[in-house]
Length: 260
Image 1 (tube, rainbow, N blue to C red):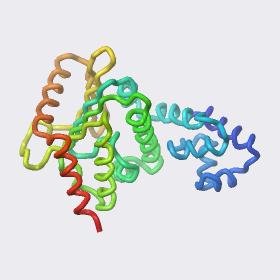
Image 2 (image 1 turned 120 degrees about the vertical axis):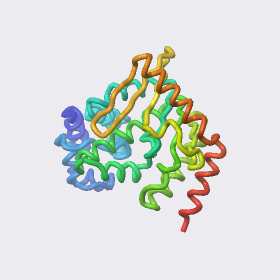
Image 3 (image 1 turned 180 degrees about the vertical axis):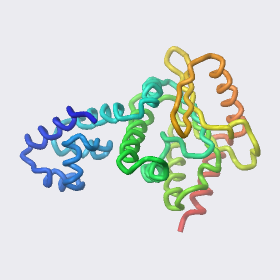
Image 4 (image 1 turned 90 degrees about the vertical axis):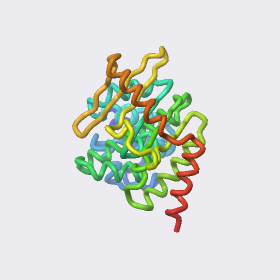
């Protein structure tokens, strides 16, 4: 983790004349968490970093440094794709089993990461990276044109309350002008995308790069031949997905089913 971030946090707190306990109370976290930030054991999540900036009057300094630190803490195999993702003018993502990372609520992301092979500290670090990706890609000043195709099965597994919040979040995101969300219903039957998730990134110069991830690692696919295969696979999954308005209607029904 970034020692420069830890040093900056210690300096900013000291300049304000605050103890760790006072800083923790001011932003509604534990003193042990402030200590972890200042000793390189944790990186603030985006919302926590913003509250620290507000407390210290440091503009966006903590938020920016924390985002950089999280990028450095990302798995080595993910970093090249993360660089492409931040430069993308268009994103196309297909997920048959999970809600795509860029669309996940914090609660859903936490549940997914906690259910895998990561320990608690690793899961928290990955969560911070995922939330930062969302803030950078979808909430940035120039978001890419982002199209997501998600299998209906991905929305039917999980804690009912978490999933109700998650589906409601998808509906909210689907109203953004540069986010296109399409659901593959069970009625689509067997289709090409069931062999696995993938993402396609289009850069400013028109070049495409693909990314695939499995239990062990992830890999970029820039080579023309396998890239062309994935583009055809995208056309296949997109052809069986519902249009944007029908997707939103289907999601609304899911939320209604979970309402108390």
